[in-house]
Length: 471
Image 1 (cartoon, rainbow, N blue to C red):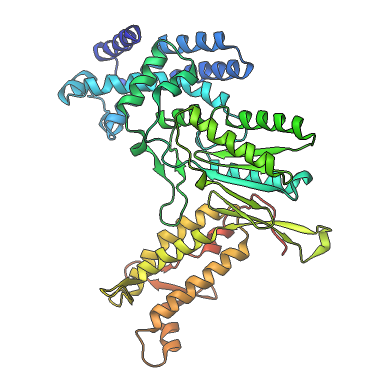
Image 2 (image 1 turned 180 degrees about the vertical axis):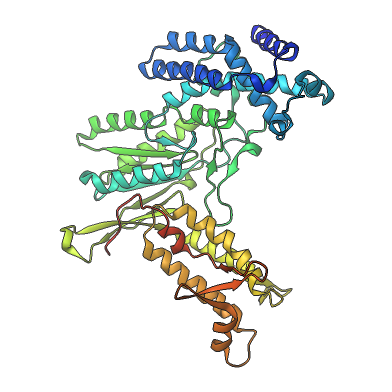
């Protein structure tokens, strides 16, 4: 590891001693060079050529372009206002030594440099049904994949679904088992050892949408050491279960199939038919797989259900219902909607904005709040919930949620009035905007209307990914 520290420090010294301005560095060419090497690592890993992967990784780490990019990223991590401080008189040497950031900067730069080479390898190693460890609309991709398996593959029309999640798996990781699984040596092995011993990975994990999300879904903002460890833990998960299924089929003499979808710490296993022996063997294989990487898996986090009963995955409820309109000659239809637990938590978050509990644990209205305060407090919560479900949930479900929210606000508002409640509700709480009466208030300064955000309005602005439902 000392050789790469030497390379990084030489690049670091060249930057500090260079007479060129930091803003004159051609960052576009540097990023293109690094991305090209990463593409070669990715393609070589898909082909399964480990020697070429190691060759390109060493070439990337030894290149001055990757070292420059690692230092630039480390500067932005150490100081969030670094870009604002760059001007014609900027001196990087004076900036670093005056702020005593050199040691922290070198560690972060080496961390970024090694991630540049490890990221494409582990993204290529992941199974094609694994999501959540790279940037993008990963939850939408996982839900669309689940919908495609259940709706477009006729062999899974009467499927059985095993859903589960791994809880608190970043707390007590076995570093020896994880390093043994990677088969790394040299600098990469030492890097993983130092990271697993020194970093508190559990605190770095981001829980998604805590206002309404009951399930603890881990989200990765960017490719960091957490997403890398997550890829290493779940690497080979689907292959192990399918290998176990093939062994069961040879003993049972029956044709059974399974499909998997994995997102971060959540997963589902879809069986095309019900067979108790196969399901038990798959559950035992799940326990043994996580035990092999030192993760304590609790079987109480597993749930088995039929597609006709419905199952929950990533805050969405999948359920196959009878189609009431047979114009498309389909006897059943797959419906996706928010889970009941998430809806209950969402309404509870809205209720806490309007009410509070007294000493006797009774709900009391926040009577001191004015109309604009109510709207300003509810809008962010409604927007976050609707943004999560806007691409995949039918419009009529969003309209039902809006009706419940409207009824909640109406009951809160009319409690203040003793007579002519409906008349005062219309005059004081609603405005006529574009021929529609909506819950809104008029800003006294800008003279513009601030309306209550509706779930269906956010839904209408977006294009649906899945076809609409006719139920």
